[in-house]
Length: 238
View (tube, rainbow, N blue to C red):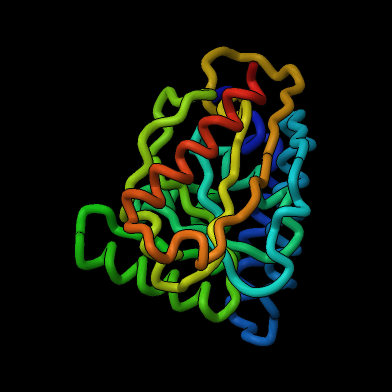
């Protein structure tokens, strides 16, 4: 946690500047998603330098070249989304818990990426968010989803996946890209006061195409993707 507060403190001038940039971009509708994503990745790059963070990427050749898709990743901490965005060159965004989305810096980031906030306390709002993600993925957008629903003390362990998280991909009939995060928790979710350099990893696994899972229900898909990520994580950490 100390690293997170340090990064926020040391990056305050940049945070204020980018808060203004987000406000400015929102007022000008002619800015493309690519331009917004470029600003978001620049924000992440500055934070990484200030926080002594390095992220290595593997398997980018597995990412679909065209169209929308949903990336389902194991969840380790506050850096997870930033790590994926840093190594994912094409514009993508996130489905995020509404409560967490209004934190300082997170709110500006979600607005910049035009992510979707999901109210977990309301089943009706959850369905609405899932349907919106599905529509946007069908239209070509790329989303990050964390099907564990939380990351408390996960570290390099993986919890059960929520089947409902996969309904957005099912409804969009889009590719599902399993994503393995390694040591991501070490950035902002470890106790102590260390600012020693930390290295995380992002692994993109081979996608499941709609033809691969069209005859499966959401629970079966969740189990399949969970097991693929768990097996890869175990091998990487061995």
